[in-house]
Image (cartoon, rainbow, N blue to C red):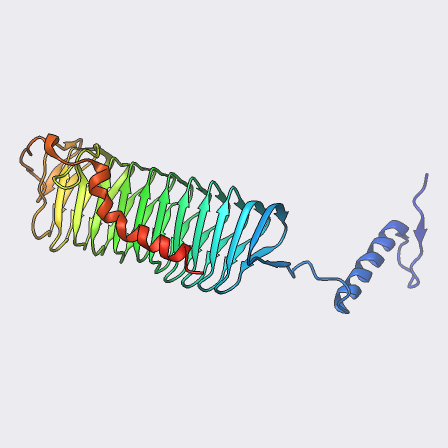
Length: 324
């Protein structure tokens, strides 16, 4: 069967009728968009949430208004989610397929949830994540706290501010903390480098594994890596290499770590102390010869001693989740 054609009025070659109809349909759609009868595809829909949404898929951008409170229960957001200034968002068994942004002073509490896009938290924002999977970077820009408990981070964590605790987590990527109040890692596996710099209250790393390098610099407070006199019975750390440099006024304890590469320390005042580190590479600087330490049998347990470092974060979580 032949294809119907329509001759061009200017003497050109015949055009198939189906092609002519297709172009007419495209032109009609363009005209409808131009006069505002049909929304252009680029104009994404927005759903404002100031209450509870449950058991549905939302093919739109979800926005929590400034000062609002939104709960998403068993919801799939096929788009991005934005929490505006001082808004609260509670996720329970939900999934955000796009990016996730928490604005200035906002609060997010995902539980048993999943975020496929990048997570960005702005100044004075906070997040308490439990059993949640983040498929891209979690980026805290001047946040007051990020507490990740029993969660999975496929894109790593980057924070520049606040109190940060990662506990019982798996991080596929790097952890970078700069200009923070504290950066603590408990019972966590990191498949990438760990960098802590300019941390006011230092960093406690307890029963932590890092596939690559660990670096702590320019910090104060407690820098306790492995078993210590204060943070006892927490188990050893396993890491690729460890560098502790230029920390002033910090209590630095490095004990019972398994280090595949090098252990190096310099510019710390006072110098680090500790022992019983198994080092596959070289030891140098202030950590060249750490003397044996007494048995930690008299040390307190992890749950007792980590409580003080959790107190401020837990207080901030309670304040933000109940403020509206």
